[in-house]
View 1 (tube, each protein chain N blue to C red):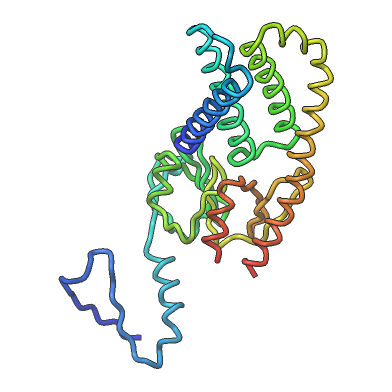
View 2: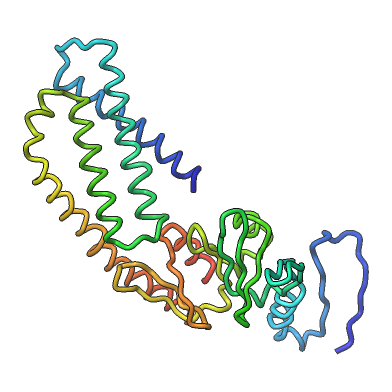
Length: 136
Length: 148
């Protein structure tokens, strides 16, 4: 489990780093950035790798928590992580979006509920039926 | 049935060759199953008197991780302790009969009664003694391969 989560972390880290670099190249190619700002990009990629490489992977694949806990943990941490990512990207943008945090949290809870409860329910039923068929 | 033992140094140490009359071929599966289930034992600790006892692997229903040790439940309902981590225990077990279903639990597939999807959108395996355990999605893949 630890090895797989570690691999997943580094895969997401690398892909996000390349993606953010590509976005910078396309949309902000005329802007000069300080060397210290590179650490902000590293921070953005580390947060993404923790969220998408470790947290979602562990919650969806490895843990057997109730959906309500998955929804609570993933909604809260993804919104927090998202806000920190925006803050690392641009402090002005962070101040611009922060008043809307309750709406973002609500949207996050709704989307995570759909994924962790409704989608998981359909998927679990399908898997249980398939395993029962194999048992017979 | 008469049993004749012969030694053959060319065989691997973990291989036993059984020769039968062609008419007995239909019983090969049964013979294999009996041998698989009867020969292997596990040394566990009886927590009541702290003594080591041998139990047959086929009697084990569930092995659950308890920090650095494991608890072992047998089909009669008795509980024992195993002085190993779950990972070490898994390595010494037959992978066809014992499957890890989540980070803390290994079950004996011989005692599976059915699978069910619970109200909480998780997959539950129900064993013949009516105990139930949750199966994590990652280990579900192993499960499919081993049950086929």
